[in-house]
Image (tube, rainbow, N blue to C red; front, side, top):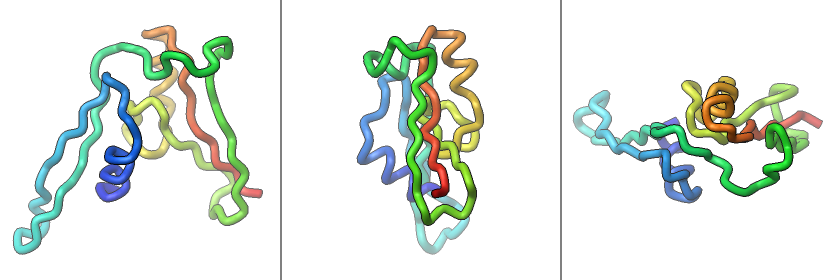
Length: 108
């Protein structure tokens, strides 16, 4: 997961309310590995301009090679199970008036 977060953090622009923190992994002292932690800070909106007329922005993608019928990915950067959605966007949306929701991948 640290590799995925590293890829996401380096290829996707983070909202200004998020910080990327690098920590060396101590699980293998002979080979230092880097872990990436993404932490959302402050209560500002994540979605400043995309489809603001909608109550919650949720996109669905149909993919035939999924093992589960539905997988929700976090787009608010507040999920405790990141990169998977745990519903943290609901609290964020109530607190900030934002409308960010998950990305849903559906099995075809």
